[in-house]
Length: 292
Ligand code: ZN
Image (cartoon, rainbow, N blue to C red; front, side, top):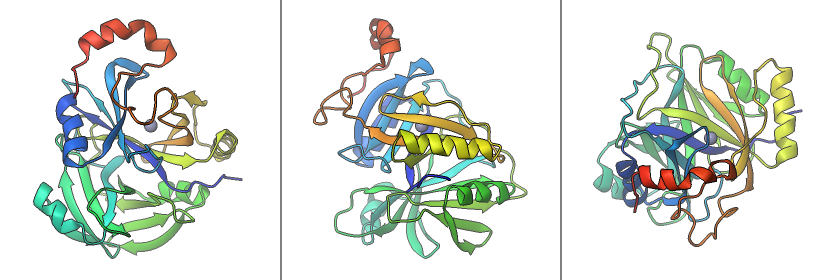
């Protein structure tokens, strides 16, 4: 039995210039940097986490900024757009700040724009309340030659297909959590994406706790997916598997959260390293580009 997957946990991208990446997601989009750490699998590179004030699962965008990364190309087998939720009347404000173009997808008005490395981003005007600030993730759009296999995975996870529009299929999680939508865009003739700066590296979904994660791992494994062992990511625990269409999915626990190794008030400022990389601190602090 698959545990409840209430929505997206985070979206992780590849970037180039760390300073430009950091400035865009904090100064321009107004997210809080909730963690400054390194890529646990390649510690010479930052892993920057941006989200709401509390660093809540479902609000998080993360970046691996490789200063010399070449640009990726858009295509099949990846996430081509990540949408954040804003209030219904916030798009005029954001259009003045970001430019971009307006459209409407599945009845929701959006402002579509690009990040500094060409990241495919949008603001979806669907949240309640006032104020222009980004509330959470809204949805991701996956570009696929064939949407069938990914539709099967989302169904296995308990998500339902709720609408279809121009070759795009909208899937929603049960309940009303943040980031509860995935759009599968069927593009049979599109080329395959090439990973690089501006590309999404993986999409993570939420699970409440370790028991739920183990249940998910078992269910995916029983269904024939090659899923990894549990990896400790310090702020959550993760399993990963690649979909038949080439998209890397992660399932991450809600806890322990970004205040696990520093106070919530100041998190995101100091360079935090997991225990296994602490011995490299001097060198990393010397080599990583300083951030504000
Ligand atoms: Zn991740």
